[in-house]
Image 1: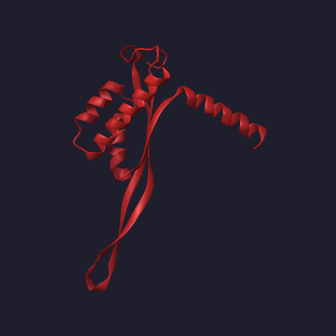
Image 2: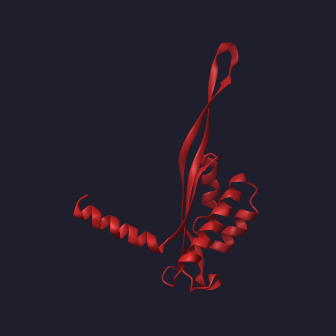
Length: 135
């Protein structure tokens, strides 16, 4: 690894030390359905996002609710001296990537077979506190 790459990698590593995030890998929901729920809470305050996810009827909302709780607890672990109520937490970034696909076969008319792709996804939630300059 060259010196420029090493310096850039160390800078990224330092930036990630201050950011609280949580990941959910191989979630058995299609990425398209998960992105609809993720778009609902992107940029919201954490308490409001938890409320929206808890009362949302989608199946993906329950998984995202638990993931957001995990990201908030990770933020608390990194910032031990700060109270959660005073922190003004918000969902800084949330993104959904496609994961492995289970390929199955379904019988079809006239001796044919249709391929069924059971999709899954990876979700990453980044939580940060809202400062006065960002408001």
